[in-house]
View 1: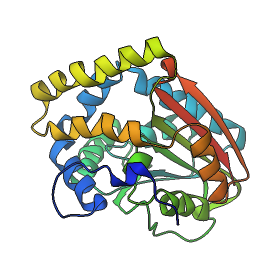
View 2: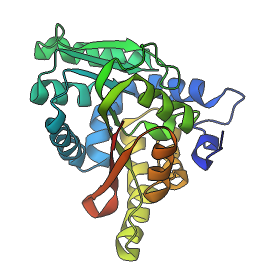
View 3: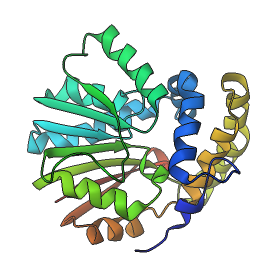
Length: 246
């Protein structure tokens, strides 16, 4: 099984594995995650999710799994738009899930979406259970990319789709310079103002830079069992969308 650079990028300098460190990081920032997400993406994260959900309409999924669901934003948006019979969100961080459950309660969606603790690289579901799997900004955090993507493929039915959003670096040199300034100078300021764990937001650009995006990610998805993969880039290339059919 191949190793990828992003698997070696860790939030903290301690002896814990990546899965444990990522869980700790999101437990630490759970209360500030949603406002920081809006600020860091300048509100574009909602638009990106909407476009990913639009792509799923062609297969009319009735059973959807949202991997690395966090506070449930992708699951909520998909439930509202696609109205599946079953929507499950899983995440490593119980603190993030607690925020998500409060959100579901306030929106009257607790009976329609189930949020539960789970490891993306060892999904506790049978083969072919879901019509669609969604992931927003979570694949970078997998301890093993191949294990995580292979698990997503395993729990999808044949003909089902994975809709994966991941942050990426612009390829245009001018846009890339602006991105570097934003992630290197502006985001740390936001982090100091809003978060008690500033390391989480220096981990962010480090993990984005190390991630195998574009054609390399497409190749990996094909190796993990998907038959067709299309790539779209949003907002000057700061977000990449991978739509993969099993």
